[in-house]
Image (cartoon, rainbow, N blue to C red; front, side, top):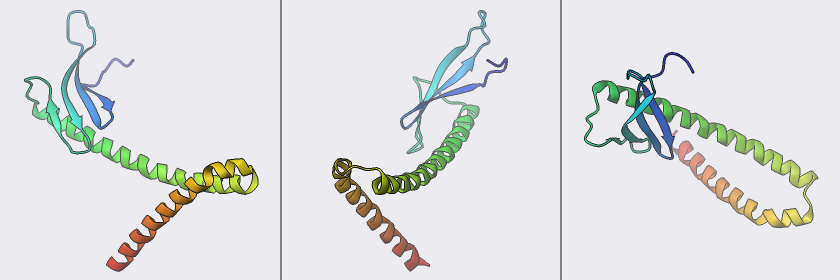
Length: 133
């Protein structure tokens, strides 16, 4: 562990994080984590814990973290989509060269429905973009 600890720690949760202030300035030199807030990344809500009032520094650090987290999640989303394209190509290769009749029977209908749904959405969205431009 480094000698310098950050002033805040964000414990990731499903829709955001629990925010802790880090304190090592005590007699035992122990690391104490005082939960100061819970944040919801989806709606931007910040709930101070207990009767606490967040300082401007607390609010600024939370806002900075939320922006970084949103950017990271957006980057992960597009990475997942690029991986999905790779998986579709690998699935095509598998279906063409390796899949048994039983395996194809097991997945064909679900794959066709998912691909039809995806194609419908993509075609509609493309048409919307073309009509705007």
